[in-house]
Amino acid sequence: MMRKKVYVTRQIPEAAIDSLREQFDVTVNPHDRVLEREELLAGVRGMDAVLCLLTDVIDSEVFDAAGSQCRIFANYAVGYNNIDVAEASKRGIIVTNTPDVLNDATADLAWALLFAVSRRIAESDRFARAGKFKGWGPMLLLGRDITGKKLGVIGAGRIGFNFASKAKGFDMEILYTSTKPNAEMEKQLGARFVDKETLLREADFISVHVPLTPTTRHYIGETEFKLMKNTAVFINTSRGPVVDEKALIYALKNGEIWGAGLDVFENEPDIEPGLKELDNAVIVPHIASATIETRTNMGLIAARNIVSVLTGGMPEACINPEVLK
Image 1 (cartoon, one colour):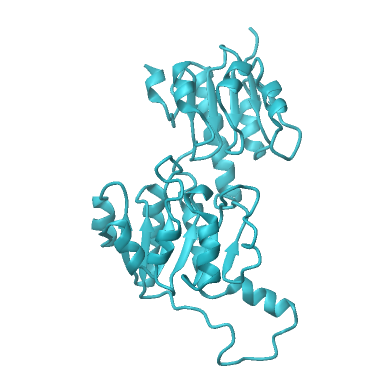
Image 2 (cartoon, rainbow, N blue to C red):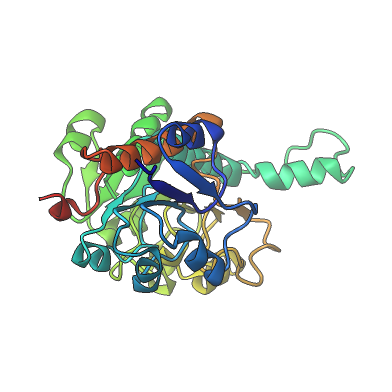
């Protein structure tokens, strides 16, 4: 019996690749970069399963190239805005993701950014390395207190809840806004559900944890930044287009907010001109889930989803469960 074929669009931790090779013929993109469009179309051709990344645009053209025998596209991410899920469902193709496994890593990174901005860590590092440190000074690189302040969490899903839970150690009052109240978040954390405008006006720190959808594109823009305190710290580890980057740069330059920490960008990998020059912005290259343990577990989940589907079982993290009926 011929072994089924799996295509992996970029090298991921070897443990996941090995688990697929035990049962299938696996081809992995040999380049340490995002595939060009024609390379992606050629790579998926004739495959029974594809393990894809958030950087791969998966649409009807890709489904056509893969062929009708292709059963599953397993996304190596919790988000899946890169995949036309509706089109996949029309064709009976299963789409899976990797939820839960990266909750801690992403929430931890959001906190790392919050501290880095508030205490001017990156700026201080550059200052010290440049030989400018001449000794302790009472006005040197003053930052902002975190303990006891008011935390605003936008989005009360898995990661937003996880992020908020870590605020307990800093004795913070937690405000949150979401599409609906989260009773468990209120019960466990004492969080207070408020509307978006109230959160923006009252919070000292604001962290965004929403998926990218048509309704969340530019969810934070000029109007929202003007509502924030001029001492506010803004964090985004969700998706870049959730924030109007031009409006953010204006707010940072003109003192509408204190600072910002970003893991994601509106036009990745491009960064909006002017952002890199701002000392009150800490920017990192989309590394929220970038721990050895988390990235390995993401790969293992994606691999298990493929194994389950190609061996007649049920995937553990299906985005379009209607195709399983």
